[in-house]
Image (cartoon, rainbow, N blue to C red; front, side, top):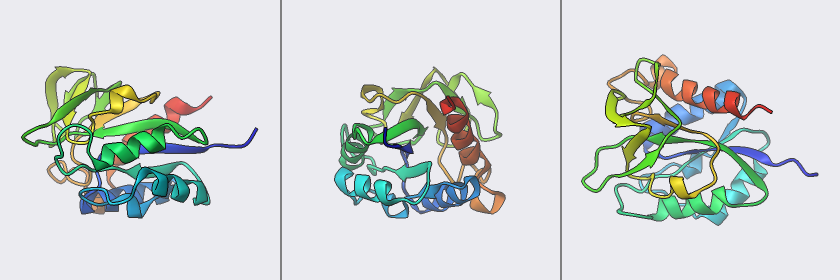
Amino acid sequence: MEYKKRVILITDGDESARKAVELVAKEIGGRCISSSGGNPSRLTGNELVKLIKKAPCDPVLVMFDDCGYTEEGPGEEAMRVVATDPDLEVIGAIAVASKTHDSEWTKVNVSIDRNGNLTEYGVDKYGLPDIELGRINGDTVYNLDELDIPFIVGIGDIGKMAGKDEVEKGAPVTRKAVELILERSEK
């Protein structure tokens, strides 16, 4: 049986997110598809699948961003293609909270607040616990519930969260989310 690259989907792709995800990928010995960043996402799902398969190591962290597009936008279309590719193993997703006019929501297994605490509640863009149990509001989360993703972690705005997740501080919330997905995926 051929080894499948392990992939973590991340529903944010702006400049702050890209820098944080690149840092975390490097620190854990994984790979970030830097060109998956963008607000909105510019690469198609098929282009991303090719890049993931060429990555020299894993886990491969891939960003998707709709820039507030309602329902299934370009980021979510690309995410669907990556998540359903039979040659890849999606081990989890990081659902990033946002505050847009037409935000959607998705279920999460757990959230991490901006102080690094696990919570059964969702969190908002600033990484503060929300009032909803097990769900998060965001703009690139429309189809997460429809995909076969074994573990979804909700967090606030990557690389930000009132300065608590800045790259200069090591993007600790993003790192914890990735580490939690890796821990849960071990067989």
